[in-house]
Structure formats: structure tokens, C-alpha cells
Length: 314
Image 1 (cartoon, rainbow, N blue to C red):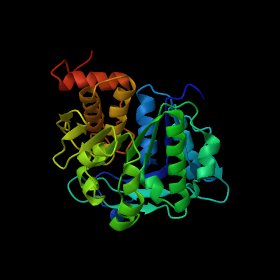
Image 2: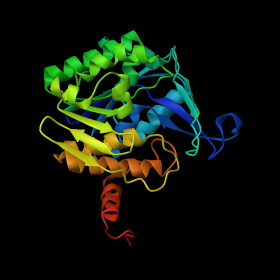
Image 3: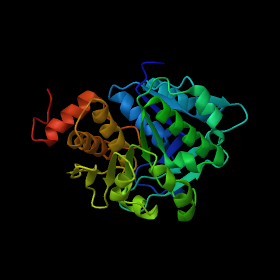
Image 4: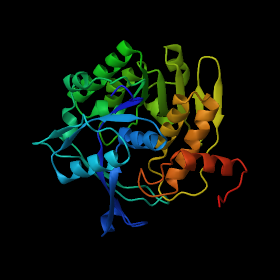
């Protein structure tokens, strides 16, 4: 496990995506896939050539088997994922019409991932990873899952790994006050934060405040679709590269995976923002959270095309 670059911790669910353009309550056919912030970033980074290990718990059910099979097929190390014989794997149902509000329904309360614990994380260890990534969703699953996140942060600090954190606020999980109480303090423990402008406001935080308290870089996804990378010394910005939207869900995780891939290879914040913007543009042009995540060749080809290079590679 010493060759692992990135370790992620979080829940993955079986995704059932309604037929294109049809409201969830009227849909008769569904496309099955996998969804979950950390799982999405894990797949994104694996496709871009990084060695990624995902920690989680799934139920001993068909959905859990499907999740493990999907991530394993992408080259993500799932060898330390716990399979709970008495638990179940979370389920997410949604539609994908970008012209109206998207209907998302979670069936995850009490899932196997809700029993993530600090003991599990400590037993699994970092395996030499130089970067760990987790989202606020994981911390909000349960008290023991929040302890698991804190244990991951402790291990990362002890071993000198960089901590990347995305609050990923989902108000169907809990009230704004609960998010502020549980996830707000975690922002200050990260080295690299990815957050929407609205999420920072809800959590009573700002890029300047986080930088002032020791966060190295804050990547802000603004309402106007501009992404900013803010450090104590400088600020970079990247306009959206989206030209066509099929399914807007998954753009944030794609931006994170593209950014982190460039960061892992020593890219500048400007280069990392561009890689993130290209990844996000590719994802929203397809269905599901995973379908459009690029590999390195696709990322380079699309970056060249968007920069005015040849669009057809013969």
C-alpha cells in the first residue's frame, strides 16, 4: 500500500437516474450508477492516472457489490472497505432535467456507512498517502462517522499528508445550524478547501478568514460559475468552460478531481483551476456523476480544443 497517493473516506450509494428529461415521480426506467462525493473524486483521480484508495463501509447486498465492482473496475483500491453483513448500502434516486429543479431522494439513514468509526480509520491507516480527501457529508452521517473524519485528520497531520476538504452541504441531511456546528470547525483543520460561495456563507466562513486561520488554499466555486483559488499571497480565477449541459450534477466533484490531479503533479493554481474547469465541463455534458470524468488523454485533448487547438483528433 506504500504506492498509494490519495486516500479518500466517505459513503458511496447506488444511483438510480431517471430516464432523460422525465420527472422522477413519472419515470419508468432508470440508469444505474454510483454516486458519492469521495467516490466520485476517487474515480476522477484514478482515471487521471493516480493511485487512489477509498475507505468506507457498504452493506452485504447487491448495491454494495455493485459499488465495489464499479470502483474496482476504475482502478480504485477498495481492499479495506468493510462489508457489513447486517447493514445496507445507501440508495440515491434523482432525475436530470437541467431546465428545472432536480428532484433528489436519499435513502441512506442508518446505512452501513453511518457506522464508520475512528477505530476503523486508525486500523486502515493512510498507507503512505500524501493526500487525504473527505467531505462534510461524511461527518454528517453520524457521530461515529464524524469521529472517523477527525481520526483521519489526526493521522494526516501525524504523517505529513495534505488534507483536502469539501463541505459539500446537503440540507436534506440536516439543518443549516447543524451543518455550522458539525462541519464549520472542520474547515479550519484542512490545508486545501473546496467550497461553493453559498456553502461558505451558510457556514459563516470566507476564503480570507480561512486563509487567516492557516488554510493553505481555498478554491471557491462562485455563483457566477467562476472558480477562484485563494492563498495568502495571491488569487487566481478561471471562467467556466461549460458549453452544453445534459446533467449538472457532479460538476463540483469533477472540478476537485481535475484540480487535485494537477496539484499532485506539481501544477500551479492556474493550471489546476483549468484542469478542474475542463473536467467539470466534460461531466455536465453527460449523464451520471461518473460518465464524463476524463482520463489524461481526454483532459489534454479537451484542454487543447478549448484553447483554440484542433478539435478533431484523427
